[in-house]
Length: 145
Image 1: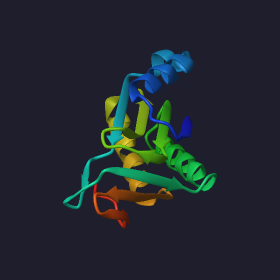
Image 2: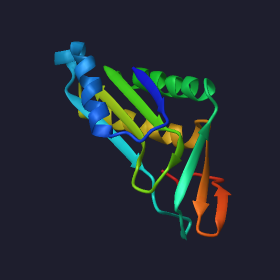
Image 3: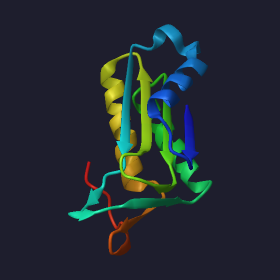
């Protein structure tokens, strides 16, 4: 059960493989792993986006993500879960978020992964500023799930 906030670009599949190698103690009771990787788009609301800066509130953001993960893990009887979220300036195509859920069965893993992501998008304290061709703007709302 882990939350990581990172400032540099990351390879979600390497992070996932490393995490699984470090936490192999769960072993035989895992029957399913569900993952979600969100990447930065080069458009939003019909406008081209050149880059984006993602800001957060240190301490508060990690605490919120930990609470999301723990609550949903309990609800779906997860064996383990992981949230990795990028902050700082990023370019289109770069990963922003990795959510992984491990459980005994696929139904719980899929449901938990989706619910963690939806809560994160709706409630986690992150702020996005998009850099456009003709200026910049703060993103007022996230895309619906």
